[in-house]
Image (cartoon, rainbow, N blue to C red; front, side, top):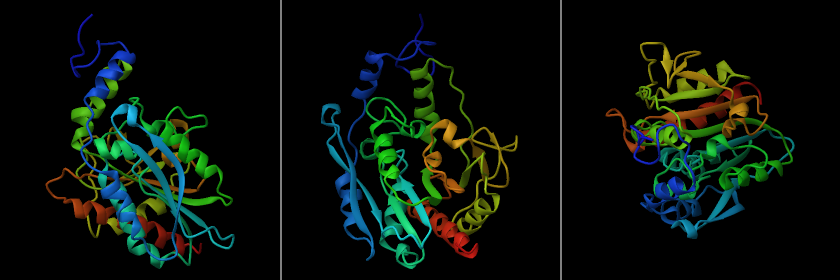
Length: 309
């Protein structure tokens, strides 16, 4: 048996057991505050939106805390279409969380009378605090938005959305692609799963991941056009790909979201997109990344309005 050449936990070619997962967990440290950076900010949302607790995570045994999970909405009116906005599926992807919060604090007021809007600003608070992709059990929430999910973060969202009485027209899921995807999370995933790691070039700029079963090309294009005013759209690599996938149009790739258990596949919405910004780019700042997420949300809502919804 040989040590894993790409990650210093585990044996090459062998999946992690409980001992390896425990070793990984000892390295995770609280680095920022969900209470101060998320919950305090969410005390100041635009009028007309109310908070509902849809779950709670007790991670004290893993060195974390007790994390209440909140959804914000302006009510469910049968005469309006419903739009879902989610952030913080991967807690380390900061602008997804902060972009959802900023929308609730500002632009949401412009759309509250036209749409039913449901916002889940931070699905993975332990991941936010530890700047992590996984939960404490070394599981990725974004592969586990399924019935009877083994991931508490995902199961809470699935349960909450099952209670919605109206169908969802559009879902905007806010994410980032970071340098740490290649330096930490992809090598860790390969080691955990007993596989060989392969990295890809991190796209420099903003791009979208649509659903290959319902790509909604016009929807994706409208979002990228809106975002291009505040952030560059990521160019394809030399193979015409982004993150190893062939582009369907500039700045867009598609995944089979429901089949992969991704958050973007959690509803039957015909309009679905996952945003990806690159916060480590020399051409980007934290504020610009937040504004790109905001522009994506607004671009999506304006597209739906222009379509007559």
